Every structure is written in structure tokens, then in C-alpha cells.
Length: 240
Image 1 (cartoon, one colour):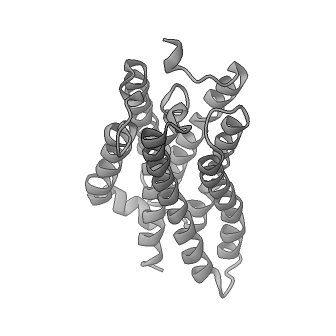
Image 2 (cartoon, one colour):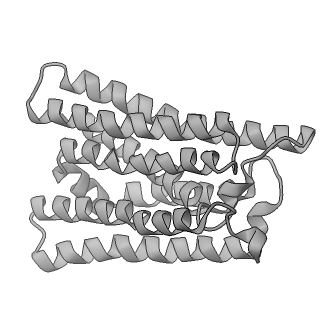
């Protein structure tokens, strides 16, 4: 059982488990506010909120179960955690959720600045660097993953303020920021694959620690969800 749980100090895991629900509640609240703006009833708006929360609670429970089976620890290209979690969630969000009429209605009535500002939760990416500090993942991967998220999170506040203040460059700035945010996630996935491949071939340090509990929740949840949020921003920009 021990090799299925991260080797970093327990306080780091506890801190992570305390903050990882925050993005879920932020997304649920974003959807709720969109529902209110779309003039859904208060009861219906609350239902949307809890649908999001319950969906991710069930999904992350599934990820936790798979983590403790040890399936993610088997080296493969692409990593098993991507095949069993990231890819299916991405497929569901792109091919199911984005085609729902209710999604289109909520997107229409959700404020662009709110869709951008929500990315402040990506400060959680600092955990990649923290895990590296304790020697659990290689530095190149940790800093590609961690710094990209931190920069995107901090820039989201600047971009959101430009939108709120109706700056002439707001739309172009949002597009540039959105592209940067997407490239950040893609670069993390590529870095994970390259690092895994090198570890399999040379025996160098891998990113297997991110496949252990509780950090397996990051690639399982974050990559697909964040990419979908960026795609939604682009869809929103087309309407304004």
C-alpha cells in the first residue's frame, strides 16, 4: 500500500487534499452564476451547482480507486493515468457537454471576465515544485508544470481586469493569454510523456510520483478540465 501513496511528507498531502476541492467549487459557482444570468430559477441554478460538485466527486472517487489498484504505476507511453482518466474526461467534456443546449445557454450568459479569472486556481500548480523540492519528481518536469500554471493564474487577474475596464486591447490580450494557457497544459502532457520515456529507457527519475495518491488527482482532473475551460473561452470570444 505504501508505494501507492506519495513519499513526500504527510503535511504536503494533507495541504493538497485541503485545496484540491477549491477548483471544483469555483467551477460549480461559475456555472451557477451563469444560470442566474440566464434567468434560470434559484432552485435550478443550485441544481447546476450540485451537479458539477457531485460529478467531480464521483469522478475523483473513481480516480482514487484506480490509484489504489496500482494500475497507474505501470510504465507506458502514454502514461496509464492519461489513458484511464485524462483522455476519457476530455472526450466527455468535448463530445458530450459542449454539445448540450444547456451548456451553450450557460456559456452565452457567463461573463468572460469570470471565465478568465477562475484560472487563479491554477496556483495549485505550485505543488509540482513542492513535490520536486522533496526529491520526488525531476526538476525539468516540475518547473515546466508548476511555473506555467502559476504564470497563467497570475496573468488571469490582469486579463480579467482589462476585460472589466473595457480596455481596447482586452480581446487580443485574452486570446494571447488563452493560447498561452493551452500551450502550458499541452507542454505538461508532452513533458510527462518525454520524462516517462526517458525513465523507461535509461532508468532516470520518472514522474511516477504524480501517479500516486493524492497527486494522481492533478493529471486526472486538471488537464482535461482546464483545456475545456480554455476552449469555452474561445467559444465565448466568438460571440463578442
